Length: 157
Length: 391
Image 1 (cartoon, one colour):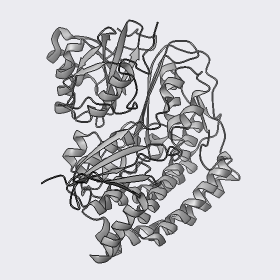
Image 2 (cartoon, one colour; image 1 turned 60 degrees about the vertical axis):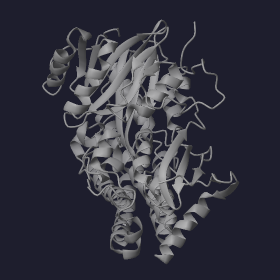
Image 3 (cartoon, one colour; image 1 turned 180 degrees about the horizontal axis):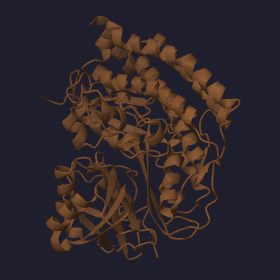
Image 4 (cartoon, chains in turn orange, blue; image 1 turned 90 degrees about the vertical axis):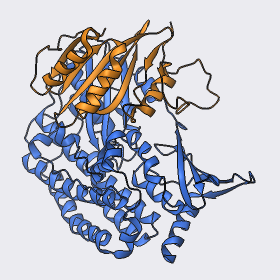
């Protein structure tokens, strides 16, 4: 879970509320909490097994665009943030989830959002988070002779 | 349909920002598929950024790209300002807008020149670059550099625009290049030869554009009306306004026109910003480093640039994630190039504007005999010119 900061305000904003309510009803107990900093940024915290339903709602129903995925090494786990942009509503919905560092794995969403193809491969190569069900999980960034079990952005110790 | 040969293009010269490798699968002259590979000069900028102080990072991220070098530091600073809860002074917001739009003009003209060169119209290429030059010279006066302006810092900008001498110079330069840009736009739209070469090739449908989440002029040429300046106004775009240019054909001509129309719109934005720029300080000193998350978004000449910064309260960020616009646009080359003629390949790749302007080795592989020979990018462009002459 990401720490809530002093400036994180938990309030309902008219452009963000419909999405958050929809996600809450679709995900049930896999929806954990959400916070907004301002009318342009929403952070929705979910359990990692809800990501595919979550992405379906965002991409298919709300017309959101996948901007990128950020992974953060937090010693014993990874925080992974899927940044979706809702252009019409004018905000970024960051879907935040965590996966343990040991055998780190998430469900691939490339079959739902084709744009996730390269983004997931980048996270896989740099952090070693596997994306189960990715159609072409081959190398994209690291060189052909780069060792299989070394990940440049993963911190050790 | 059978694959007769594969044609590898790239990887690029290491001096360029995005070295990529395109492997074209051919059936005769027709491209049936393409495989893309990148990372040939992966510089580990995110890794470095997590080991440098906040003051140093704007200079580091400025080196991501040599063409739109204002975009990344501006985007990073906005992300940090959001994480720390800083309100940038109004004058700084306007200066960021002016520098950002001048950069868009020179970047779009640079691309248009490269495209003209690829289709073999070198006169047009030289005209585009001739009118780009005054903008670079203007940057030299305003910032001290033609590229890598080092204008942004966390909390504002580092140099002021002098109302007495700079304003008149900017207006004079813009009024000098504007009529030429209109003339060049007419040269593209009204010349039947140019039109025949770039119309209806490399088509990206609106549906494909949405699925691949493309950004910037590539998205806007395919009918997606998205522009960070309008959708999430940053800097002073809320006050000065933006007229977003959208076309629906999705071919190379549309991408060319969107960029040229945007360059003309940028001139108007700079003029409006110069008229409305308020007096006051150009930067503020951050008082404390607040832990938290921040997202910076900027409409780069190539599309939406996004930086995510996590601050942990120390003077070194916990995480800096950078996603440049071409990362989203380059995969859209696959549907564009599939089914096209080999001679169109170089133009289609270039039309996404991935800074494909340096000569790199190209190896021709004949699958049947496994024989290999090399040609360069110029020869590929030559084959395009020959085709245009005959048709």
